[in-house]
Amino acid sequence: WNKGTVTYQVFWTTEATDTDGVSWMLQGVASSDNTYVNVDYGTAVQVDDDAKGAGKVTTVSAESGAITIAGTPADNDLVYFRIYRDVSGDAMAGDARLHGLKIFFRSF
Image 1 (tube, rainbow, N blue to C red):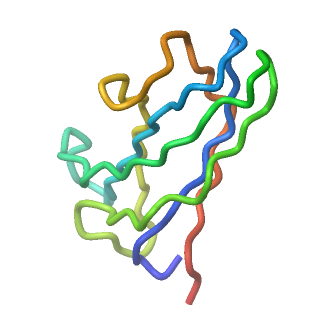
Image 2: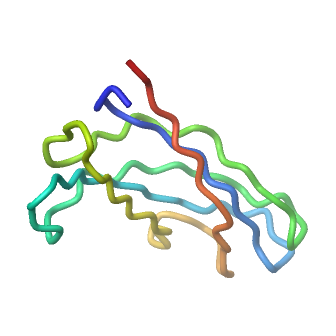
Image 3: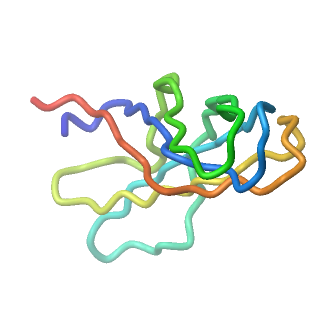
């Protein structure tokens, strides 16, 4: 990883028959050796996706915009990610089930 921005894609389902949208948010922070892990995450980046109309159908979001990892990323750091659904920003009344997350990054 070149310690630059990353993007992501969400893999998810819904239990209900629905076509409403869901808003996923992801943020990250780098932690070096001998540093506190109770640190502020970077700015969350949103990706919206609509359900496919049937319950229990795999849904894959578009790729998000660029996410800046908070802290000062360095070689051998551990990067923590926090993903959540922003229900204030979406229209789906039911539950959305997160199944996976694909992180895109640039190498050297």
